[in-house]
Length: 474
Image 1 (tube, rainbow, N blue to C red):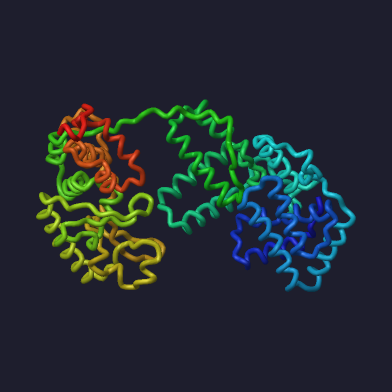
Image 2 (spheres, rainbow, N blue to C red):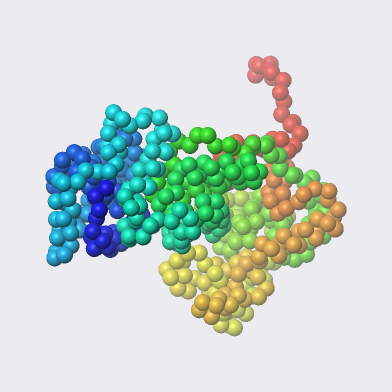
């Protein structure tokens, strides 16, 4: 493997940063550069840039490297030549040294570019590519580009977690997604004994997922969640593709039928609740809302004239509208009056506004103190933000609602496992029981696929006419 001078690696890494390449991908760009130098040495290409880089990418395609990886490799080589144009002095000498070495050295990894000896089986290909990757990163010592031996265990993953947080935030995923993906990444790190991230392979993922199913006995949904988290980690942080993964012991997925309350049970539970939790649960059942959707409602979400409630940024960043229950119209308008009164008091007391999404406050500097952005179910007390010492108002916390719900269920003596989501299940089931169209229910719930909504056909007794009959005989 052709060794790149340390000064050249440092300069190239700095140039990558200036070019906007995420720090978590720098090591892969350097890896592709080394592969490229070996390719040129193996096939006697002169370092003229375009011709050799095109041939290099074609060879990667021949070896069935994914399109994203080929683009990354081409970008790595292109940036190297772009850097060369602006380099001078010691760096130019280092570049010349590498070019001269190409004509003298032969790549250690000769099998990487040999077509006739390369296995066609995808599983063998993945294992072999992993071994190549380790050799390429380690070198012959084995050592990394920094001159330090790569750790088989006890490596620092701080940079990986920082990069994971950055890419999730950049995609505007929810904080819960960040928490979940970070949790599975941490478990995966522990399973690999904190192996150097550059040495982590697809085989490690297979073994981890199998370990979850066999040794830990996790549910199918948990194993799928772990799979999705690691897929995101490999694609967006490690810069690797999963490819086809076979040989994983999958946890058996059992058919799940949600718990549904009768209308009488719903009324009994709500009857034992107090303000504001009583109104919140009533709205969740009346509109089929998730707990996060209901608690994060703002004043502007309600259109009382049209009797429509708009849900912004629901699950999957989707918007939808649901009808406002007529029976709750008076209570909801009274709640709006209380919010207006509380807002006026907050403004007089000089509060700093409510919490806003993302960069809204920077874009609209006064939005946090405007009425339309106030929470419809505000918390009783203001929250002190330690970072800037500002006093802001949050909405009613999920924990508070869940505690109140558990107490009400206990008092109502309902012999079912009731959570806040049970009222959403009951909403859908009761509409289906009333012969509402399944597509209409799908739209009200905000499901992307009608198959998700179809689960509620198992929660109620079917009233559909199943006798085969011709329309002419109606």
